Image (cartoon, rainbow, N blue to C red; front, side, top):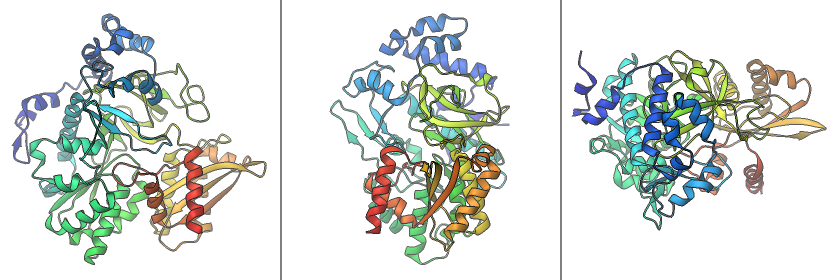
Length: 515
């Protein structure tokens, strides 16, 4: 049987360095992670961060993982930015990673804050490329995947590659734009919409250009955030007055998505297709490529433990997080061999882009411990637990999916608010749906299925969580609101739970639409 070194994809040979990395030994998860940690520590030991937190001492320790947790504090974005990353924007080298930072990914922004500047290094870009190829190779095991689709063009709906330039010589923009700007030569033949369109910053202009060019391309698969990919396909179908997207792209065989749960979008996608396609999930964030679904019927995504990210898992409970989802100063943090299946954790990452014990903000649940497979259940700050209902985004997505299937309607977007109500509390759902359906029926069914999915929610619905409200809105409202925030298209996602200033802005926006 041919080795990875001899494997030929799209009629090109893999570079030897990448081929070698793909052959990393498949040892036990703990060994893989400790090897990654030591590699990161060795590379960064002479940085200012490495010197302050005694990386040399950690490397000499018999138990490097525990010593690392003992000496290095946990960080959220604000802490690591104010203490460390801010210096790199002024061109200071060797702060948390060797050398100067040339690229910064601007965060996708489901948070209320202004854009965050996440360092992107050459080392991280190379690691991401290795993981992309690993995922591509894993497609061989997919029984239902149309093989011919892999050899066709692919459409990547990402951010503009025309990045903003800083005074110190760095560039900043969406991670997808940075990845495309640094794409290898062998991407050129297959990558759409191509360099010219990819540079366009205005999302609507970019979509219109794609619509115009669509019939000229033979697209085998699409990569991107579901909401924007769905919008693009709808525009193409409407423009050319065809029944389905397969009338334009007959070889479209699969969709690679990430960043947000796909359940709310699946019904809408199916209505745009002329035949079934395969959905492939990956876990790519601005901070790194964390995992991907490596087999067709997997319940979750396989974490990448043997490349460039050392992961820790903080039990998502009242001991480690306050009511607003803020992590305590010294949380309990577990390594990969200490986690349990079925429990929920917040993810800490240490990476070759200079993130150290960094709270990415996602919550995960292990669904197959033997294969290190997880599902994303939500965000540390995007959950509702006003009275102990512990309602996660994962719960909400499942309820939306079931109701969509039962009523045969599309609910591509939604958001939920919790608030005091008649001496107790209530939830209000804002649901995007262009199909005819009664609001009360939607409300009752979502509430019913949440009671079945979540026991804590069911208990509180008979006591302190007195009522549930629902307002059905046109899908366009959600897009218009994102546009007012400067977050239209690319990797941006609508927050599933609204709190604070974002909630105030949402209420103001809705009031403006009704006048």
